[in-house]
Length: 173
Image (cartoon, rainbow, N blue to C red; front, side, top):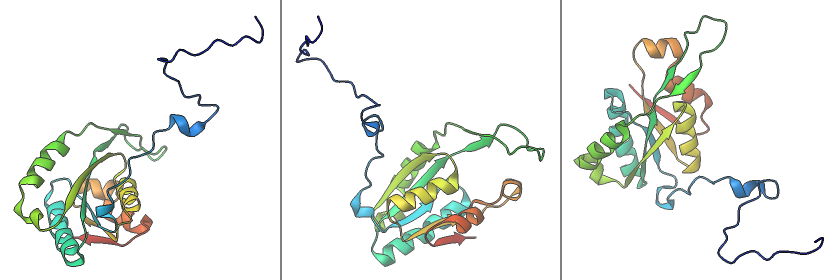
């Protein structure tokens, strides 16, 4: 029956054709809250240095009258030991601490001074902090300094971020 068309049932859902419209399949990242545009991004993992960075970022956001974007990036661990031949391969490890950190932050009285949100990301810490900063058009990114052997071996987050970021990076000791 060449040339005969069968009508589509009214209740049938249309499936996006990825060859016709490549953007139809991709789900865009949700738009950020405009109330936090030009805010202060701070990396937070619950460590002592990130708590100091958070305290500084709160004061900075309060003084500038902007919002605070607290970013928790899930851990990445090397799956191989780097022997100098190939760079290590990293695997994202599920990090359920974001929920716990969110509850702790919600109960913190010092955060009542500024509007804030908690953003969870997975991946490379430097890339994700810069990406959140770009999404929110942040005025600055605040991070705590890295201490210990991990920072010496793989390089500190603060140092790598300061070298590659497109906005000011404030490192709190």
